[in-house]
Image (cartoon, rainbow, N blue to C red):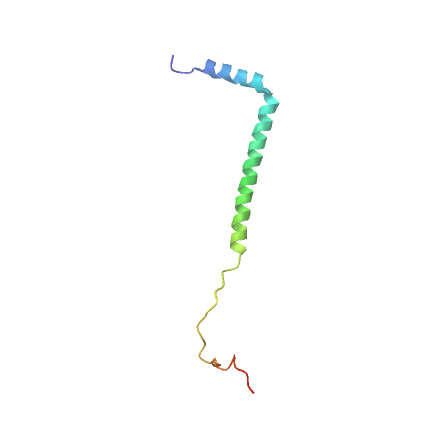
Length: 78
């Protein structure tokens, strides 16, 4: 009683085919396959854009040895 024989599977498959029809099942499987392909393509596009992005640039706030410090920037000469 606990095991399913080949006849049980044949009856289940026949009922599914009668309910949904052969065309609907193949259309459904085609839609699933197309969804998986577009998902994989989206993942590949994300990886390509991540590789092409420029590295983050930072500003160095330390003064260079040859730079002169101006102290009279805010004063007015008369």
